[in-house]
Length: 122
Image (tube, rainbow, N blue to C red):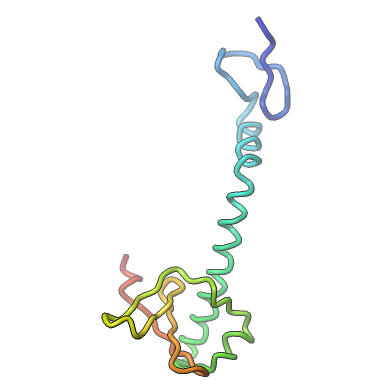
């Protein structure tokens, strides 16, 4: 019978014939290594979304409902990342949201901030 070894550290396995790891630590380490690339992508996207939400929240809660486009860009807001968008029935106005805080272009210079309180009840 061939010697079975831990998939992570290579230590000789004892016990059940279908055992693949010598410990929970090796099992976790092995799976984390395999999933690292996919997890990093999700982690990075979520980080940008959290930052965008924080920026919108600070501006909105600070009493600003209409801001200059540059105010978002100066605070390193990334307009390419948002959680969802809502269009009006005639597709003329699109509001982009970062969780419950949203924004829509008023004109080429100004942006209107909104808060969707219905999302907080989910």
